[in-house]
Length: 103
Image (cartoon, rainbow, N blue to C red; front, side):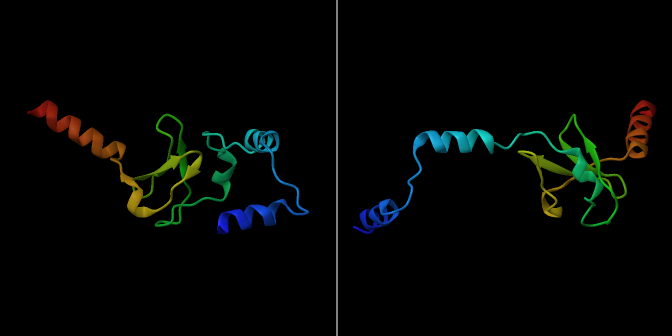
């Protein structure tokens, strides 16, 4: 009942969207999965307040200062600290490799 009233309200004196309009809207406003690197000019790490680096290979924003990586999902950076992953710095990787070779 409420649904029918809503449909009749939308249809009275108002232009109703048809499928061709919806298709045009959906194609013109589609969100690309690529990340716009221009946003790096204003984005900083929410924890360290230092600039972020974009890693195209893994599609992540890296904070070298504290060693964490924020994921980019559907072109949108997820800067929630709980969702970030901890990455090893190059020095830590070298230490791990040297200890493995000594053993």
